[in-house]
Image (tube, rainbow, N blue to C red; front, top):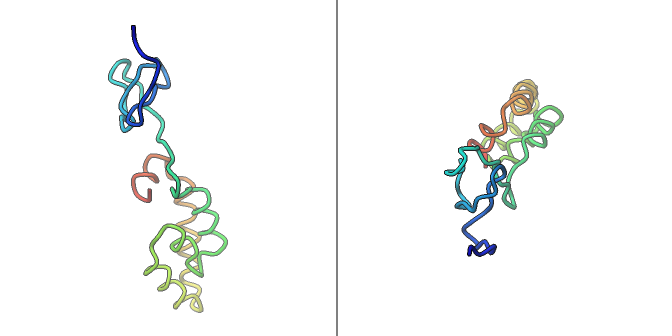
Length: 107
């Protein structure tokens, strides 16, 4: 008889319900890709995209993504409007990027 208790290192597969490792990306039993679990402090791509579009000239999206040095650089050159243009483009890129790519790069 199996126990229905899952310890801290395990989770249930979203498709078949099998008990799998918490870090598993694909269920070894049914082969279905598991959704990425968001952790506290993880960054949201929509928030980064909106910050890039609206406040990209001040580097707000870079500060949000933890790239403080680049954010300060954007802030220093904000009077040239070049960071605003780059921030607009980066905001659109963040919003169109798939969730897995964003998570791998920024989370």
